[in-house]
Image 1 (tube, rainbow, N blue to C red):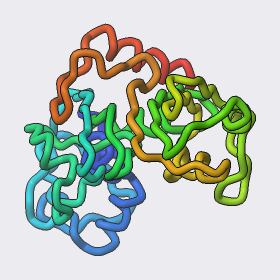
Image 2 (cartoon, rainbow, N blue to C red):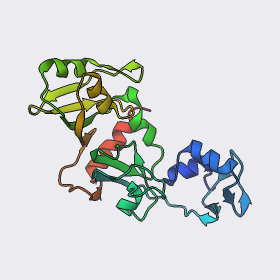
Image 3 (cartoon, rainbow, N blue to C red):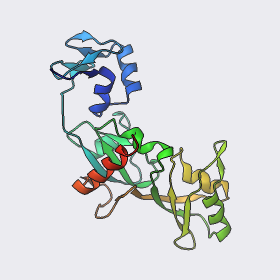
Image 4 (spheres, one colour):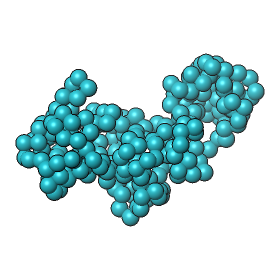
Length: 236
């Protein structure tokens, strides 16, 4: 018997978009199943031909997990009309999408996949997955500034979670977060009177930028991939 899944899950599993966005595409009449307009909640199997805007989406069982060293100037979006969008810059043959984001004016590590099931598990704050950054601010800082960041500061109406903030130099510091609010580090530094000049992510969980030049990508190693999936499954 052929396994069936909901049409919106098909979209996430094939790295096209979130389930919510898939529902919007369906409601807009942009999705067909066997040349018939899809409806919310439809079930599909590998025997079905699914298309978005008339373009057939092939069934694929392979899962893709890659890491990319994003340069400044690349935008973390799958929207094709955006100049220097991350999907075009990488040019991967499979349909993939970024897990989380890095601002256009930030650089460093970002993960991409076509496995929609793991995205929320990695991003959800309560799981406390670490992200490590190297930051340069506009002027020398003191220990009080590090202590304030470590304890948490109020941004966007609420206090940030405690984090690790360590000195790397007179104007450089290392910050390890377990949450990812919009432009969080820039806002945190601004809250204590400093402006971020450079922001570079060097690690997500156990995965680092080691050996990856700016603008290049490579698949996760078998060990990196296994550790990632094990960490995600532990939360179920």
